[in-house]
Length: 154
Length: 154
Image (cartoon, rainbow over all chains, first blue to last red; front, side):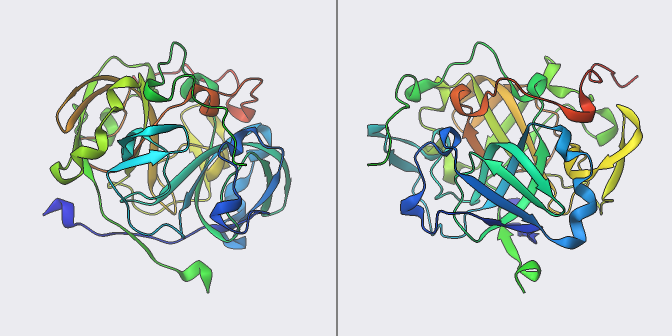
């Protein structure tokens, strides 16, 4: 059966972050000025050619500290539980994280980025260029999250 | 060694698309009005609660027809090869696809979406809400791709 299919991935790098634990990451890392390092393993370095031209990149990583999931979850933004796929909870059937970050600098196989909320040691799976005409959407409705963002971890 | 680490995923659904083969997908599926169906397996349906409130969602899937990759690739947009991670080529070390799509309707465990360029039978890995204050970036530079988009498959 298709749903029992097993797909295998091997990380292409590792994320170096000042956040050592999930409890330390900000609720909205995208608004933070904290710099993280994205180390792409040397064997993949050639694949970074021309990445410097992009101000923003999309980083896909593995939530390696995530264990299990619930299909209805409470978030910091609301007292009402919402469907897992309508939230950004790290506890997901496929524990894939995705963050659009600002690319600050590149030193060989290491990218310095701003706005990444992954914790130190997170396995890196993929990097894609952020293209405003493709990912930037106008007239967007944010459902239950509308007007709720802004709360910060205290 | 970390780079030999194997991570396992199991699909949460399957994509039903009028595109039966890679050769049929438009270069810029995001601009297309074609409707695709995202079937989330019944066991995960509860996780879709409240997804209807979002006009756009991010869909992560498995490029199941992708075989191997090159670190430098030519794209339809340019005669010059670019680093794989500075392109959206489906042939990647971790064959993960990502598209921001418009959510048109939901019927139980099936989402109707516009702008998805995945082919029929693509394994679905994750769905996340698109949040304009998080994913929408201003003052973006698009590197080698700047001004090149617009070419269509003929």
